[in-house]
Image 1 (cartoon, rainbow, N blue to C red):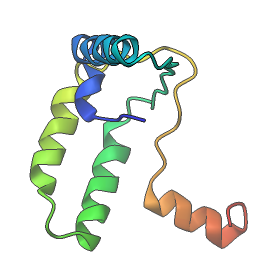
Image 2 (tube, rainbow, N blue to C red):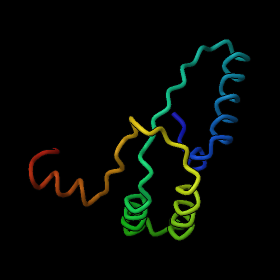
Image 3 (tube, rainbow, N blue to C red):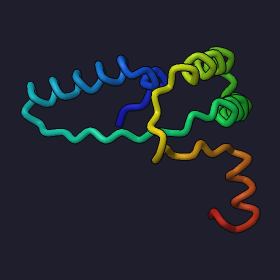
Length: 101
């Protein structure tokens, strides 16, 4: 599995996939590439970054917030089938009401 906020840009994702396919051919190891997309929800992403910073103060959360702003403007996501961006507060609420354990 590979994941990177920069893969929101189509050209970066295409280059990564081409590299993986080339490596697969060179090594003789078949691969299957599946893409999972999250909805373009910069507010939920910002929320998660700020709450993650509360637990991991060594992260550069201001840089992450800037990347969210930049990447959400160019995110090439399919109209349907994108996964919801949950937030830690959503999870707390679902745990409290018993819908997530």
